[in-house]
Image 1 (spheres, one colour):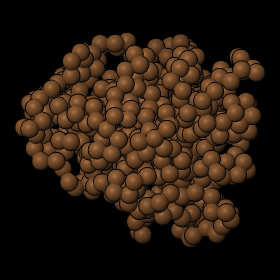
Image 2: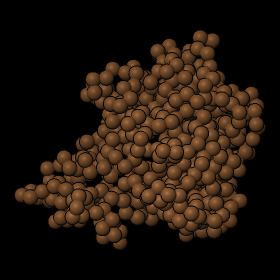
Image 3: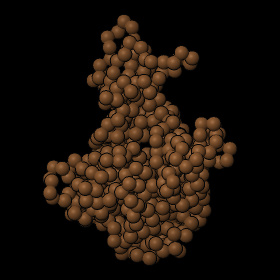
Image 4: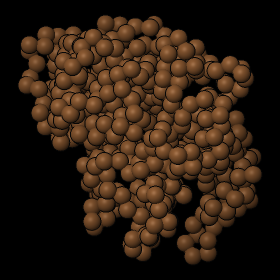
Length: 513
């Protein structure tokens, strides 16, 4: 990768340098329409879009929330807002009213960008949420022709890549979403490190079939700009459709989470003896535990490498694997700590763990987010040495690679999506038929984890039925992907005798079979 390119101070400067270096090379490909956009075209259109946003009142420091599906408009929107120096909060298009309300109640956004009516009426949903909160953001519907203006009227290009201009909300272990504050630099470091680990170059064709509004979207964009590669964009991941599109466009690397690996394997098994994706050389992802045997299945059946990485909203890339690592390392590890990340393993008493000893993974460095929007959360999130407490348990092996062994945080990872058990519990507690509840994650070959709600029924009322629970969540506007797939009822939830705390590990052991 070109060193002057990598030294770009901001995401916009990185786009400019890449467009100057390889102007006609393809950057983005719409998977359905096959529309292609070069790096120079992306620069030009994003600049005109930024000028159009400016005409609507968006400028440096403006707080902008956008909820757009994966596609070229979403990428151009993120780049245009970066050109203006706005503070942008991307939220995934799968989110319903409940999640949108939670974010807007906290960031009090001045501007809200939504798609037109699709499978959901986004403008109507935005109007209901804003009215309920008493907010009056300028709402821009990103449908049809995108806003355009004259680039000559734009303000000076932002030069401070260390300024906080991105906020990604993650629910983590609590029911209240937390806003992780990022800079262009934190996202660009992750993109550079991912490009190095994957070994991609301008000949590669990647893909974004995951929600672009995840922090992985900005990281992947930075990787495209660093490497000069292109990416196919799909607003929805349906494996049979994606396979046909990826074959046609000769995709060389794709990924997502463990659930994506499983989906590709299942599709390959429908046509044994015939390569599903002949051009594919690498599956790459993270976001959920990966069984070791899955690595060997992918290698044998899909005929490509599999590199599984470790990151989170607060630190997009902590550890990364390379196709050059050994089979044993790729099957059993999350890779090596990346550049600009200092990692240590810490025991519960605060002492440092030795090689091979399990403890909490803690990290610090330029790749780490700049704290939460609520500074009261930072005291618990960072230790006295400035290391971020990830809440994950892991070991550093003798070869320097990291293996995760569990989680301190009570978060369920379903198909790569972090789901707060507390959020679902708080909602279920409000149901009249629920006297007590525990939401747990259970091992699931297809999803990584499935969401299971275990409830104590209220006295004098008929027990809550599964279909009734699903309907309750839908009426509350909860994202479909969060709704439990399993409902169990018990006379009394297991609790300890001191604090009456529900013993979730007992429930996990009971229902994991």
